[in-house]
Length: 437
Image (cartoon, rainbow, N blue to C red; front, side, top):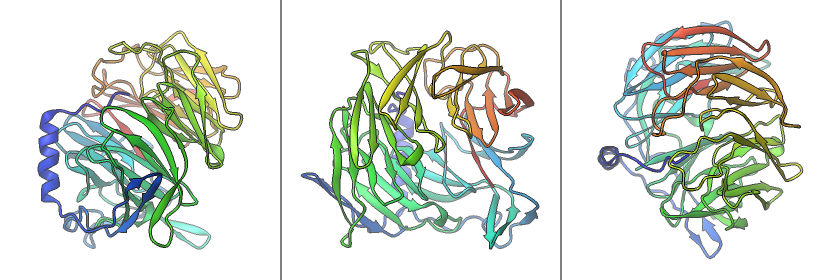
């Protein structure tokens, strides 16, 4: 997934926006001779004015109590975002936001982080649940695109894991980490900030014990991955494990028992038990750049590309990495797919949305296809990675599949293996994510 290129206009917008945002004082971490110092900073970086009075987070907003959780979808289109009911696809709100935008779960079950010019902007999807003893109360309100922004010159990966959200700024190599549930619509939460030595297209994942996985490289080359300790009393982190044998580092996924993988151009790294192991690809160039993990399975689904010189390789092989046995298996198929084709079912099955228009379901234990569900028309991956193409996103037992050619959103019941509903959207959909509500 070659996402590093940005338009000049977006860079100018990002720089201008960042200059306007107030940068707070935080203790930055520096990697030096295998030691990385990390500092806790307040949420002052990017602190904005409170959300508008009409937002879901304001006292005057109309809040309704619901009988059950109300999941919602957030979809991007060229110049805006749609919020839809995840049960029937009804459009609840439309937010204009110029440029190419991306969406990421914020981790609190209510909000979404929009990667846009200037940073990660907070969108409140307007549905949430609050636990009260052994039960919970469920609420809904009007979705709102808040004015809160985590500043980033080039917002990259946003990874939610173990109750924390890690944001990576490709323009600076800076990482902001916050407790996912601390997010609200009034001010940004306190963040732990880590500054890597060089800017690069990277990623960070915080584990349940406080350890932090980070990439390390430059804008020209990224080949290192480090597992850092939790912060000590002086807010310092040290290197627990390191590998420099991962050219073209890209992507990450977490599997069962908190084992992790990071993709390389010649295989994949497995990180578990404070060790980093390299699983070599059978080809001199065997790139695994996108992965989909599941807490229900030790196996990680990944793509697999063999042609280093291709402008755009349309792969016909995918990978299964078993983090329990440290084995890599390649599965050949008779269709192709894109980086937005990979997903996992609630039970851990591997899902691939093929260019043949079918959603293919695989048993990750043996790599055998269990079923193929016809969903969209046949399609071809566009050369430009930012252009819309059929995309799959899973929430619970439903796989949501977009079809840009027809402006449709399809609901696939993974239990029955059938398309249960199709709705026409007002805009051509691009990316999609969801909140549990």
